[in-house]
Amino acid sequence: MSAEAVLGPIGEIPGFRVLGVRVDAVQIPDAVELLESWIRERGPARYVAVTGMHGVSEARENAHFRHVLDSADLVVADGMPLVWLGRWQGHDTMKRRVYGPELMETFCRETGSKYRHFFYGGAPGVADHLAQVEHERYGIQIAGTYCPPFRPLTEDEEREVQSAVQAAAPDVLWVGLSTPKQEQWMYAHRDKLQVPVMLGVGAAFDLNTGRLTQAPAWMRENGLEWLFRFCAEPRRLWSRYIVNGSKFVWAVCREHLAPRIFG
Image (cartoon, rainbow, N blue to C red; front, side, top):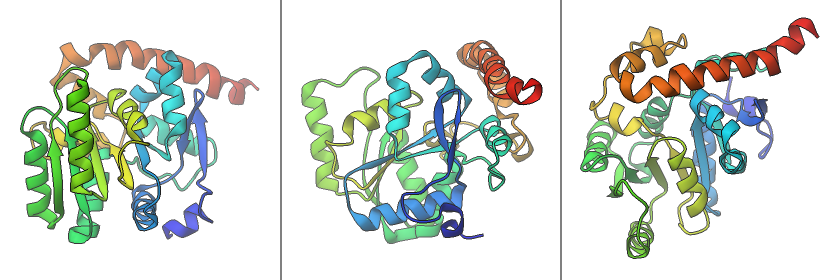
């Protein structure tokens, strides 16, 4: 089925809510088609939130971040729990998650040298490495890269970023700052940067360069990537997956599943 058949008329993207957070019921081919249509329009900057259980959990605790997600032009399900909840709410076209690293790879592969890409984020040198990797794999045009410090930018640094992006004139700006920083950054810059599309893809910077090892495909496709990542980085991720994950499961059971089961 084509993306046009799934999405319907322009502006009518099917979606659902998970704990009050909007999620769009699209797949990777749909997202690629939307990105290309927005680039052709050359309108105001649009941004895409690639979110999963962690993003929804953050939004439950932070009203401003919930507003940031709801203001996004596209919120895709980068997590099997959101896919399962989408199916539960009647969106049977949701077969797979819109995995951030895969979305980047698919877009670069299918569009090749068609567009100019800017990479913002990552540890020192990672954005440059990622740009080089994607250029060698798919022949993409590299508009520029920028590795921000791990602190708020000064006014001079902020002006430098905006000038660099304006001079580079990218079609797509990939942001790798992790959730919720990357979504908040895109929201804050949506009226300041002249770029058709921004995407917050977080760990894709490290995964697509090989700095981090991806979970096996069978784990990614069955909602077990969290276990793989937790085992790799337990000290950093225990709170996200054990504490926040438990809260997420309990809230979903209470707000989504219990009314349907016991209704």
